[in-house]
Amino acid sequence: MTDTRNTARSTARRPVLVVGATGKTGRRVAARLRAAGHEVRAASRSGAWPFDWNDRTTWGPALEGVETAYVVPFDPAPVVRPFVEQAEAAGLRRLVLLSGRGIDDPDYLPGDALAGSTLVDAEEAVRSSGLEWTILRPGWFSQNFDEGFLADMVGSGRIGLPAGDGAASFVDAEDIADVAVAALTGTGHAGLIHELSGPRALTLAEVAAEISAATGRTVEYVALPPEEFVAELVGQGVGAEDAEALATTVSPILRGKDAHLSEGVQRVLGREPRAFGEYVRNAVASGAWVGSESVSEKRGTATFTS
Image (tube, rainbow, N blue to C red):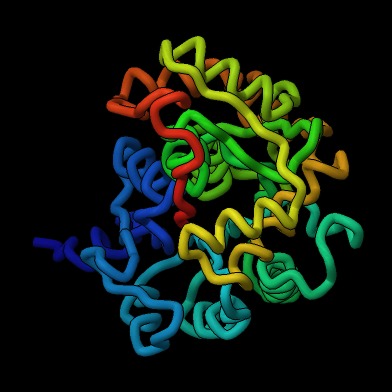
């Protein structure tokens, strides 16, 4: 009788590594991969596969036996470059990197803005590697309003940001995950950068109106001067440096840098991206903002969560 065990092992699909598997996009990517029958190595500091960007001893075990990876970079430090080098040495073949809008625009953020500089380094590391790479550059996530740093503001009934009357083409994390999975498992994405946005740009006042209509609660947008925004956050216990960094992060909206539309979702998925209103309805259906007080009951007590 012929021993087929080695053949079975060699033809079986290897696990897909998801770095940042508990985040907004990572957990959605992992769920989609599992639903498609892929084994997923969900790596995070608290997950089944421990992974810590600050502890390089955790990188090797996560990479062992993996050919494909989805990577959400670590903003505070430029550590993607050594990770890519180690990944190549471990036999990784394909990598999909989550980056961000404006990386190719020198006026998008100041040159010393930390998140921007680390993403630039991450992209350069991936593009100069020998890997089969794809880079995703989404705009502002819609999910920031219920899963991210804006959730508490929405809950308070007051979205206070230094964005003026600027608009952003918010993109649904569900669409980002769909594009990521297509790049991880399909063909024709090697060496490409996919710019991702929603179908139209909305001002923060329009965002507040959409959320108000869907929740039945009053949510208003207040355009704050940057210095007042920073002072509010500092008054809530946020460090001055972090508060100023967030004001800088929001500044492209104020300067009209986030209003343009991108066609990456359409090109990759063959359909229109999800509208912001669809995101809001899905968020409400999943229990977002339940128990939030109206603006008249809880004005100005939002807290910042990174």
